[in-house]
Image 1 (cartoon, rainbow, N blue to C red):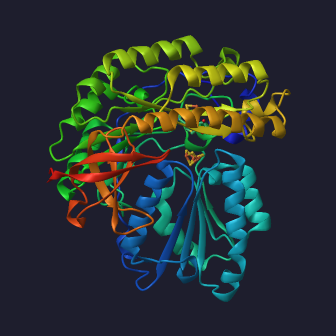
Image 2: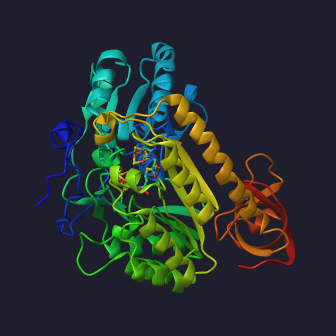
Length: 488
Ligand code: SAH
Ligand code: SF4
Ligand code: F3S
């Protein structure tokens, strides 16, 4: 039986009682997307601009929306000012993510006055929030379309509707449809690395987190669909794939006869793919089978992003994380024993309600124990409708900021230390393209996900190369190409 809240509106009824829903077996149905033929090329000559916030799920969704816009005839615009269709694919995970969006939407008003034909759309996790929809209706009526996370496949029709509508068109399902929509056309942002969704939604209900309400319950794509997509990517020349889900190690719990370990092994064996990454894995349910599949898969990068959030058992309990500090540390040990060259990174939250200095010290201590290669550190941001927002012992902004800065100091020491270990070593890197700042410098990545800069021929882009690391900074490694040149 599951009494988990399904939408933000249901939440108040359930906030007092937090637990994880049991997972119902889903019918493995999927729906093959068919682009509406009458809209094909209907926007020829027009341009779109997409601004994506938040996590890789949103980036993947943006690629699909770009794909549908392309089918409609839209071409990408370089600047917002040149676009006829502007899409904000939003994130609701922290308050500052939301404030940025409102600022940008507000700034579009004069553009819209100059070009009334322009269509503005808001999609992503903010669209799932009822108060956001109310605010759009009241304060930002120049937003033409509000599109939910379960509705992206409806974008072409909604654009058509919005062209003739006088008011904002809202299309937001509170929960996902029964079937996963497959085969949506896609314009991928990169030619070397590709995102591959394996699972949608989240069942974990961490008490601070909005994601289970904005993305719905966990749903896995079938193993066949995922492998088919990866084979297609390999045929197109992609070298690296990242499997995406909020809790990838739960993959398959809603299917029959397969789990994340099976999936890892299956994609590891797709010819042409050189590297397989995955995010995010939750410490909960990180099985021995998964550890074994990572260890034995030669294409699987030896990097695990393993968010811990806090080093205090009391905080972990109140966060509803489902593990203790001891369990987490044991898991880390187990992983390190089986995969000695593993790289671990994490997410940490400071200033969760009730966090005392002592509890915060537990987090610092855990960071010193694990010595992560890097940590994403966040100030707790109360999210409307989540249980933790109602906790009465909120920590002051001043204390939160001060703790964040201390935590970053400690964590960055280990980041630099980890980087320095690379100096003088030979690394196999995947060359991704030109570096962001200098076109004559190439950017590549190690198996452990470290950014490497080196000078080399542009023909090495998309290939594996061997480099010698010359110098380490906190975020990048400087290297030179080995005389053996490009490998494959
Ligand atoms: N599913 C992933 C995380 C997705 S959200 C996991 O659990 O591992 C990414 C990160 O944002 C989380 O790991 C957490 O550290 C942070 N986060 C989520 N909600 C937050 C909030 N309300 N305030 C601050 N940080 C938050
Ligand atoms: Fe949010 Fe991740 Fe927890 Fe899910 S597992 S509720 S996405 S932090
Ligand atoms: Fe943000 Fe939604 Fe991702 S809240 S982090 S875009 S799942």
